[in-house]
Length: 205
Image (cartoon, rainbow, N blue to C red; front, side, top):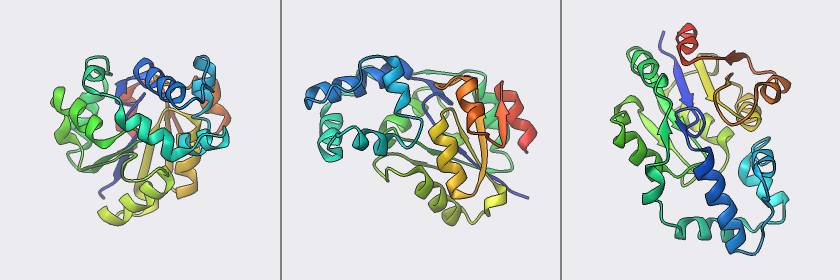
């Protein structure tokens, strides 16, 4: 039976930690709210929903998004390098299943990076921050769009926040250890599956 595999983008498909951290830090500085001083501060924002986390820090979300949207993105593409072992796995998974991306990143950036590495055909759709800020709601929307039940839906993420939101949506949670949060952090939120290498995703078929 067909399954739905919903992938986070940053930290799962591409290595974009330095790019994303720099952009967030610069946005916060531009609006006079430099609450991210180091990498630990940055990664802490992803222990729950990123957008809710910055609001709790006293950030005006509309102001933050305006600053983010005003920043050029072209130069970032070269620095978002794919996790090469993931792509053969995506090609295999898509043969009999539905794949989509649910991310806190912007959809046009995701599409551009996937196109650059010729893997934009792997995914049926991309639900980025321009679609909505809640990954839980985007997961629920994707299940409705693709007509696939919760017990056949997997969310693959690399942060504690990913796992928490996917659990709230009632789907199977898959944490990967090659992304932003350390294994120890991921173990604390008890994902249904903890994946060490991309090939292990094929065991979910």
